[in-house]
Length: 216
Image (cartoon, rainbow, N blue to C red; front, top):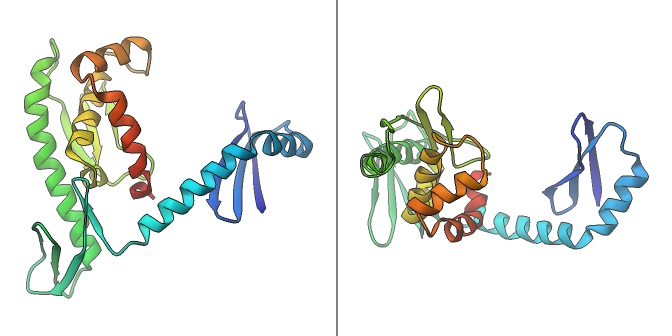
């Protein structure tokens, strides 16, 4: 297996699967090749598991389906006079004009739907938090996380890809970010608050990991 080694000021060694035949090793500057080899040998079972996960996620990414609120839909693409996405029980129909592509149309649809649904959730959830004002909502396509909270700017950012996941996961992420207005890390106090407002959050956080392939 091919190894890429990046040394930096980090304090520990981390391994990332690039593909089935390549690993990225992130290590502190002072780490020797022998120490890296020892680590790879000791944690070979974990690396094998990461490769299995990568392969499963690759298979999901290559499926000829689109996800919306946790359901995988076959999709049909049509050329038309205006951009549009319609979702029914069986199929997603994407209509796009000559000046754009169907994937961009679907991205725009997800962003619009994310604004609509998350704004409704904020109206429901913000009153649950004492003294909290409704934050500004931003929706973006993020590469590595489902959402973020900029508490100083009173802003919550939600990844539009999140709307591909089940609605319960969407709710959990929104509540997770709202809790960060009170606790800016993932301390015990933070988790206690999240547990109070959404007791099922730990199960949903585990389930959300199965949708990580959507971020890539």
